Image 1 (cartoon, helix red, strand yellow):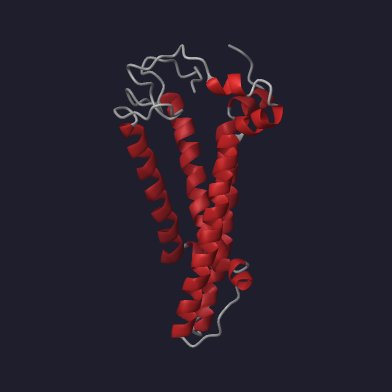
Image 2: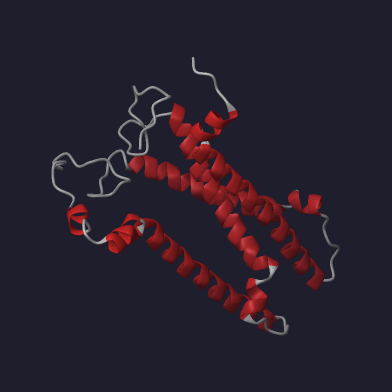
Amino acid sequence: MPRITSRSFLKDNGLTLAMMALFVVSWIGQMWTGWNAHNEGLRQHHATLLTFWQYLQSGDFIESTFENWESEFLQMMIFVVLSAYLYQRGSAESNPLPDEEHSQPHYAKLYFAQQRLLRRVYENSLSLALLLLFTLSFMGHAYGGWLAENAQRRLTDDSPQSLWQFVSGSDFWFQSFQNWQSEFLSIAVITYLSIFLRQKGSAQSKQVDAPHSRTEG
């Protein structure tokens, strides 16, 4: 049996460890900003403020955490099951279609053979597209949340906030962190559980008889 060193452990488990680290950082961010946002609401109503430990035991924190975990694990469970029976031609997240031919030439490789810059963009096009969608969604979240916050302030005769005041406040970042931490957790969980557990026929699972040590993508 090969000797396990700290370097080999990090290499063999880097994806799960990285996602768990991002989850922990985001969850701490959720805790901190949620505590500040919750106390700001209490302050406006002249109520007693909560300590950080009291906030972690409050319904506000518990609900916001498990509400996100619930939706993430439901999403992953449905995706794992449906990918066992349904297809999306050409997708890396789908099983190959029964009639699909694997011998067709990759037209992108042929087209970009002499186009280094375009090829470099294409090599990273999936992450670039997702980054763009994330940026647009983040901006939409900020703008929509700002409008909603000022609408609520008008109802209570409070002075409106500027967009910068809203996006630099705890409430906005609490909403962001509580979503991010659940995303990182769900990816880390399915990454690690897929080592040992199986879903027959799913593109998100190894073959049922595959050894735990085999890495498949």
